[in-house]
Image (cartoon, rainbow, N blue to C red; front, side, top):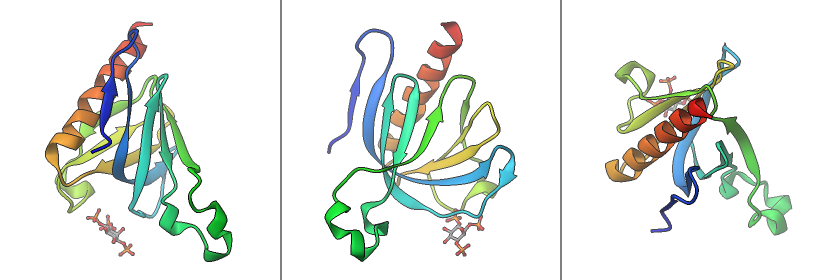
Length: 130
Ligand code: I3S
């Protein structure tokens, strides 16, 4: 499925597709815009990449490139299952950065999103200890 979790040294690495939307930027509320995203956790940074389908037709030769959209520093962040008022979708995580930005992450297959939940949670706890 392309889902992989590596546990070398103490820092977790993981990559896969999740649906995501940024809902606040440093405390300022944003309009939701869900899109599927190639999501990579590496070195305590979570990077959401742009949906290639959102690439304009004129830039078609760039459409296979993996372009970062948001990078999220996990140090000082919190991750929780989102409450029902945050989204009507199932299996939604709410990630809040220490600067007050918020992202929702969602995937219909519960095992996929649960794996992200524990990997991100463990990474945040590990970073707290460093
Ligand atoms: O929190 P909201 O406003 O109910 O979020 C929904 C909207 O973002 C909607 O787009 P429009 O603003 O164009 O209507 C999206 O299509 C929905 O997916 C959002 O709600 P969910 O419950 O799916 O997160």
